[in-house]
Amino acid sequence: MARELTPIGKRLRQIQGIGDSFADRIEQWGGSRTLELLAANPYQLIGEVSGIGFKRADDVGRSFGVAPDSPDRAEAAVLHALQTLIYANGHTSVPITTLKHDALSYAKGCPNTAISTAIDTCILEESMKVVPGPGERCVTLPAFANLGKVIAQAFYYRAIQPGWEVELSNTSLTPTQHTAIKELTARRFGILTGLAGVGKTFVVGSLIRGLKKRYLRVRCSATTGRAAKRLEDLTDVEASTIHRLIGARKDGAPLYNETNHLAADVVIVDEASMLDERLAGMLVKALHPKCALYLVGDPGQLPPVAPGQVLKDCTAIPSIPHAELTEIIRQAKGSAIIVTAHAARNGRLPTLDELPTTGKSDLKFHPAHSLLGLQHTVLTLVNEQFRERPVQVLTAEHKGDCGTIALNRELQRYLNPADRRLEITHNDRIFRIGDRVMLTENRAVDQVFNGDQGIITAVRLAEYKAQVSFENGPDIWFVGSDLNVLIHSWAITIHKSQGSQYPATIVVMPFAHQFMWTRELLYTALTRAETECNLVLEPGMFQKAIGNVRTTRRRTGLQDAYRECVESQ
Image 1 (cartoon, helix red, strand yellow):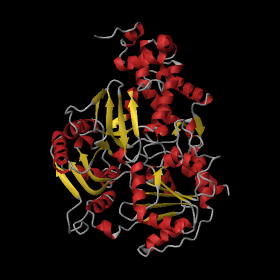
Image 2 (cartoon, helix red, strand yellow):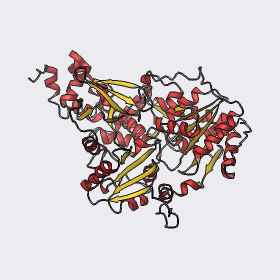
Image 3 (cartoon, one colour):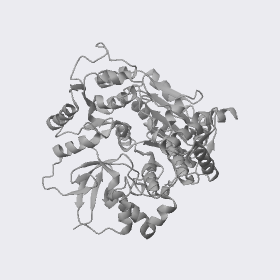
Image 4 (cartoon, helix red, strand yellow):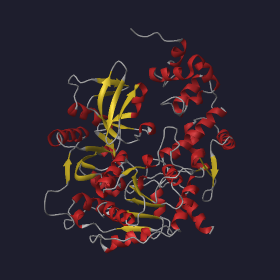
């Protein structure tokens, strides 16, 4: 029997764009005062009610008679535009002219003067901060206002401190690798970069052994759990995510900070191409000023998902010690994945002379001529070749027949059918015992973080909850709305796969995603596979991706802040 709606619930359901789910959330938020609160300022829903951004709040505002030039509406549009430019596009500051343009595009009918006034009000109320910019005034969110300066000072201070003479007993090091370690350890900050297959992890292992001979306390970390586990396996040194290293906690304040430093003489961060400014800021605050910091990463990969581009900024600063490995090591030359990835990054296909001629190729092409054909090929591959061995399906987008949502729905049907297993339905997802899932936000209190994967091991229908056993982590119950942070992960986006590698991958490349497929995305997708990469694609898509060099230039302040440190000395 349908439940009886309250007068508040009925009123909310009359608003365009507000269905049952959002109406329930809004009523739960405001209680008996919901209509009163919405009449006063409907834009306070943004950030307070899950899933409601500017557009839905604006729908509510129109229903309650909010004028197009309302100060509340203008301020909400400005803050929404700023948050989108920062969190969706990766900038850490935004020119005011760009902010005005985007805010006006969200708040249709709002006059320019109202937007300008809203920006001034937000600056006065400190919900945004003015920061220096090249040639024009820029603004940012308070969390990023001084972050570039804090990181730059920490990097610069270490870069001018002498490091250590390290004894290297590994005779397998090439002269270039030997020199790279010497260059790094000459100072207490530096970066080691190189594309896939050039031996970065091997060099890191030799570096760690050399530092330990000096009886230095060395701590290793990476930007993802999978990368940390791989680093640990290849170097025989304990490694963790940066979040775990600094003791991230639920309240956002790490255990280790400016007043309680991590017990370490050297910290090494792998997969640093994914290091964003907020995480870098927390890391440097957790380190003693005399603790050395070395960043290791692949400049060919995608930038971080979060704002900033720490490794890329560092490579552009000439005075930062930078060791670069460029030669593909002998073992990697036998990999078609590595050879093809390097060629693709340089804008071409590999030549026959470059490709290995012996053994079974680790890169396989599976052409198909339609979206459903691609989907069928993926399912056939999984069913015939990967029933008993792990594989990760990668694609560029969430939506469409070859997006993560549709692929996961089909993969669940193939790999984990209902078959009387316990399951729970949450929104439009069915979570079933045996399902492979991924966490989409940090849960520091449980020591699991965005991107961690696991298996659903238990479901309790009466209590509306499911238990996930995370890889290299704890078993955690997700109750009610907590299930919002789980997605199925047989198929994930290439962006989500950053910093991780998998024994085998299936990469799906439809023409429907052609604007997403860039040379940078292709390189990242290819190099996620350790031993086997299967490209399921429409003919011509590989060449199209190689030819697309489009990149988004991020506006960050780290380079300018570092330059100021140098000039102030």
